[in-house]
Image 1 (cartoon, one colour):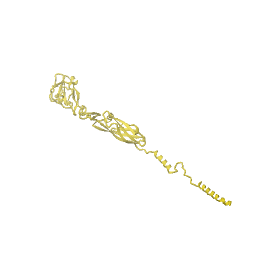
Image 2 (cartoon, rainbow, N blue to C red):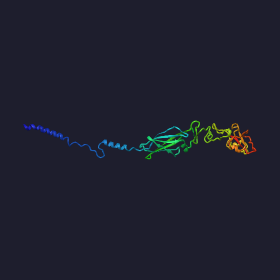
Image 3 (tube, one colour):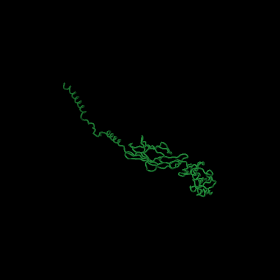
Image 4 (cartoon, helix red, strand yellow):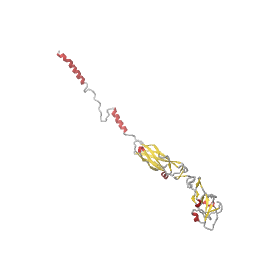
Length: 290
């Protein structure tokens, strides 16, 4: 009877021992990581991501915008050009402006913040390189060039609008003029008129309405010409009957008096009237030409 009472506890101990032994030594070990970190999908993805983000493919710079501080370039003034340049590696190292029109270097851009590059273009600097002669407005052509540290570059055309406004709407050799009144550029550039002050007569000649006004000629020996028509022909013009405040000719007692640019004695002569000839003294004459 005593032996049979203890058998159930022996069986129970064996069952407990087997249950505990089943959980030790027989389960597969967790996967180990090697030196490359490729133990699972997530570690490999991190490595690939780090590698791709550290190598951005290089490309040339790009000019995305060009602006001006003022819209028009006027005589004796300047305009500031601002170019916004983007680069994948943000390493643009040089900005240059070429022109006008020719391939010569005009100047160098100054770098600023956020990819902004600036340069100042003045009317005087443009005219020294490319004479400004135009009517109303002219597009002055430039080319901007930007280079990064890898030698990659981009070029962009830039036009600067030069203007002459109001009555002085024509540029002649870099100067805005009114060709209706300019004695140097009457009706067109480089089309001069004689103009000077002659004693009490005041201003003689000049430009009016785009045409040269009659003017008193230089001093001539009255014995060297027959008429005022001949005198004016020497000046490349025609005699103007009564064109100088109603008069056609003036005589002087001496060439010295005439050359002082003073008014002389008016003579009632017409363009084809014979000049007085020898005056009995060393005299001079002016004729009205136009």
